[in-house]
Structures are given as structure tokens and as C-alpha cells.
Image (cartoon, rainbow, N blue to C red; front, side):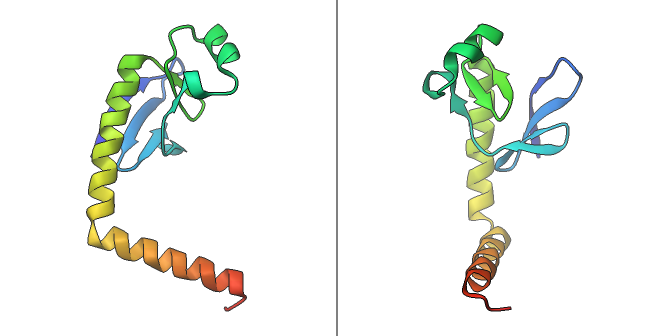
Amino acid sequence: MSTLVKTTQDGRKLEVVGPAIMLGGKLEAVDLVAVADHPNRALILRAAPDAAFLAGRVALTAEEGKIAAEALDKGQAEYFSNPAAVNERFRLAANRREAELGIE
């Protein structure tokens, strides 16, 4: 299930799919950053005066940010409660640990 947040000027769709924000079908971000907390907020606000949040490289208004945040919360809740997803995260973590230890 996906939630459309906005369509960019070049026609790509910014959507929340599960626990991720996708731009044109490719992963853009996994969380939102408030412009007020961003170190380059002055430049961001100069380029997009109505920006309240950033989803990766995409500026969002407060309303778009609210839509994205709600969809992310719902998607993350579903993702983190899915038994198959839990098993996959444990498998990936074990593989990373083995790679760090040099076990092949």
C-alpha cells in the first residue's frame, strides 16, 4: 500500500510505501527532517519558502509533511509487526555481524 504525498515539478511521485519514502519508485528517505532542525535551513527556506520538512532532497510543506509522517508511522508499525520482516531484519543483522567478524 502506498500513500501519495505530492508530485514533483518534473512529474515524479513522492510516495510513502511501508517504512520508506519513494521518489519515482526509488528510495529517497526513511524519515522526515524538520527544516527548523536542518543545518542549511536558511538556504532551504530561500529556495522553498513554504518548506517545513525535508524527505531526502524533497521539500515538503507542513500539510505534505503531516501526510507523509502519518503514512510513515502507519507503514513502520505494519512493517515492524510483520513476522517475515522481523525474521529478515534478524537475518541481515546476523549476516552483517558475520561479515564484520570475517566469517564467510
